[in-house]
Image (cartoon, rainbow, N blue to C red; front, side, top):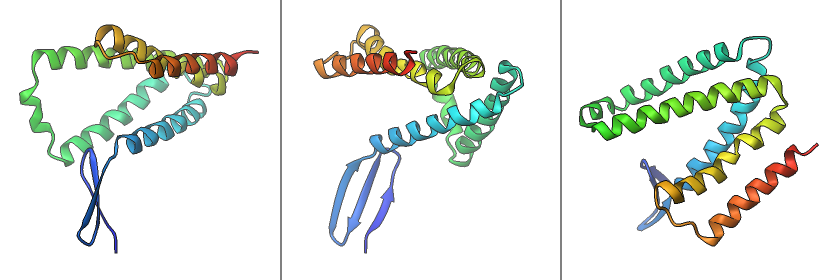
Amino acid sequence: MQRFVCFKKTMFIETGDLILYKNMWWIYALLSALFAALTAIFAKLGVANINANLATGIRTIVILIMIWTIVLANGEAKGISSLSKQNIFFLTVSGIATGLSWLFYFKAIQLGDVSRVAPIDKLSVALTIILAAIFLKEALTLRAALGAALIITGTIVLIWK
């Protein structure tokens, strides 16, 4: 009988004496993609006939309650006292960027087809690869550059009328 024991970043599959170790980052990434796709559909339905900023505000309250419930339930709030000024600054800037992204996204799906808006929004993947190379000094491998180019090309194909 197999037993799955999950930890935050890894999964151990225990079969008798054999323990197989697997990185789970890709499972979280696939779940993120699934929920991002569902978000686009639900957001398009939810933003119908209301102000896009109001819709973003409501969504933000839901996220705020959900995330803080998870943080408090897991006892993770105690980590607040260990935040550095750098942590606070970049999390604040990240929050501002997220908020702006959501505001523009909700307005875009309110005005356009979600099947055309979502691919443009996913250009963030290619932009992230480029910006990570510039600002974080991450290696821009041929594979990453090709992947970014394919994402950009695919987006153009999907939005072309």
